[in-house]
Image (cartoon, rainbow, N blue to C red; front, side, top):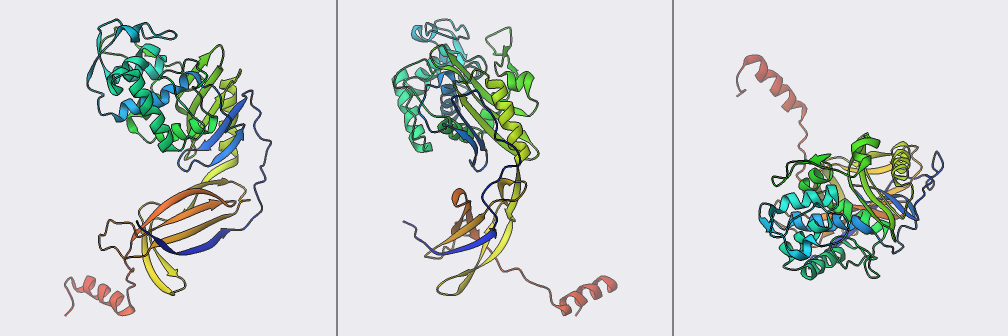
Length: 367
């Protein structure tokens, strides 16, 4: 087990706690949350950790497991059980052979419950086997208030999640290029169909130009549920609402509020940084492969600090991380970034600069 030593804390900004420039968004939803996608920072929430029925937004989990299975090009033979699943459908026929990829599109765009069962039976060996994978994935993602009973989201007393958990799931799924492509498609033409499947997500297709994807859900008992993502001014946000009579407007209101109040600010530049490790008063050069950007209030009224941890033993492999930086906003952890071995940057002396100029004038190396 690797042991981290030599923590170093420094303050980047010392301000007051958040003081929003305008009132928090008003939403019709019983449960809601707005997060920044790259860090998962919660920007707004309403009963976000409360367990609730979720309906067809369940299919985000079904889709990402299918995509990660590596079976998208395989042909799926649909069963009698799949085609007779109640609720929304892409009208599969018993014994029909269709690519798993097409089923994922039918699942996400048209919310096909028959597609959900066909996917589950093919990827998990059975619907029950697939549901096991769903719950294991939920545990791995840290979805603490979630339990799945099925791959489609039809109502069940023990099928539930929370707005925050579904935001965590969407954050994870949006890191996958294939999921982003499916979720962000206005329509799709299956090789088994002569007509396009149109996406039911009106926020994407008609109502909000900045929407990049999402999933709708509804049952009479659960009400309207919705997960969407949006990109504007270099920032990606994810919104979730459960039991929301006016969900389209809820999401637009949350997104516009988030984009108006927050912006991505660079806290750590890409490249080499020098660290002084206490109490040994030694120094180490670390390298950040990417800049660290955090969502902060545009007015700057927030406290940001970072703790750096380094491994107890030096690693000779250049690609091996030697430590990590943990970033906090208002004392809440929001992001981690690995530190890799860095090299001391050589500073040219006056002689080196003169030598370079001389060589450029005479057109050859100086002796």
